Image 1 (cartoon, one colour):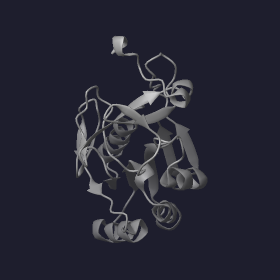
Image 2: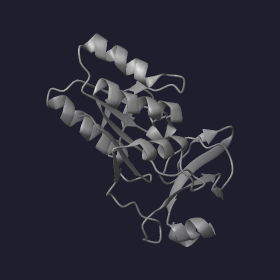
Image 3: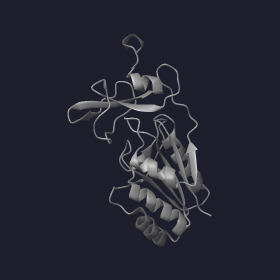
Image 4: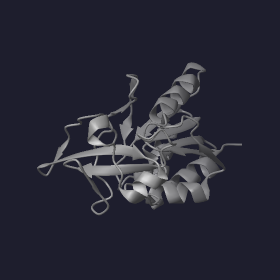
Length: 208
């Protein structure tokens, strides 16, 4: 019986690395599947910060994933699995469609995504996948805040300042000195523990 498994965590918890590993292992075992992503770091590729990558199909928000997977199954002759990276950016309708892929096409779906956005709230796609999933798997790689505590939040910085309002989707990076211009601003993300996210406590200047 096919399953819908949703694996989730913060940035730096290894979700893209695990998505690539799952896809690789299933493909090497002779199973036929798809690698999908939405708003990844590299268009048409799932990439890991460890340096590995693989071609993927970019998911447009208007794409009906059930119809798409049903057609690909007909074209390929079978469809054993679907791996979805950056699943937090999928719409709630697309999360429902992934449930149909499992139930009606008997195809395993392995989705990977962030748990919360820069405001500390569940993404729409994440919320629906948590509601639907047969298996909910917190990622075991513990990303850390600058203070050493376990990171619980993906905090957004705009021009070096922590912000709590704005569009949910603004793709940046967690690398130090990230240079990601967006409408004239530099957008980046840092991992913070619950306390420092609440207090707005960034790493002291002398420790950077």
